[in-house]
Amino acid sequence: MSLFGGTISSLEKGLNYASLKNKAIAQNIANVDTPNYKAKDVSFKQVLAEEQGTTISANRTNTRHYDFKIAQSNSKVFNYENFRYRHNGNGVDMDAEQASLAENTIYYNALIDRISGKLNTLNTVIKGGR
Image 1 (cartoon, rainbow, N blue to C red):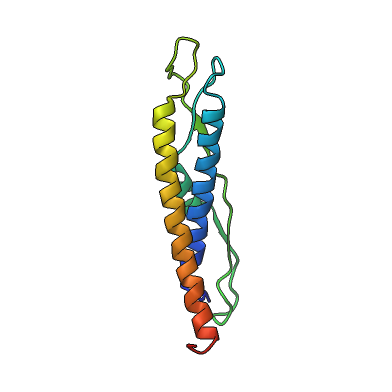
Image 2 (image 1 turned 180 degrees about the vertical axis):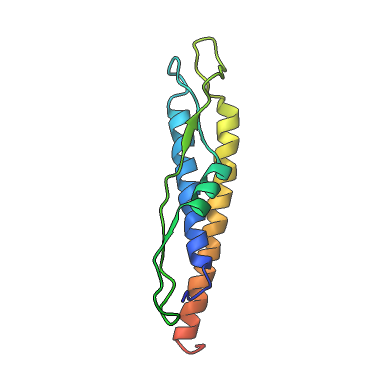
């Protein structure tokens, strides 16, 4: 039985995605001047498909047993193979990376605010509404 009906788990998966995307963007920005560097990105569709398709569940021998599930996450970071932004073979567009970083930061902060609200609600209930 989940306390919030799986909300915290879903928000956690969103934070994992945002963190992985932030790492890919940081690597792209760090290698903006590296010759033949291929820009990296994280596909939300790939991560979502993997999260939905890689759930392991145990056999329930009695209907009173809890449903047991373990999700395995193998998030994918991929390269833009045939994309060249500069003459030296570098595939990083600095303006696009900065815009993507800003968008990802907003997404991450929204998830943090939502988790904080859920935990504050739980804290209020534990304290008896005080």
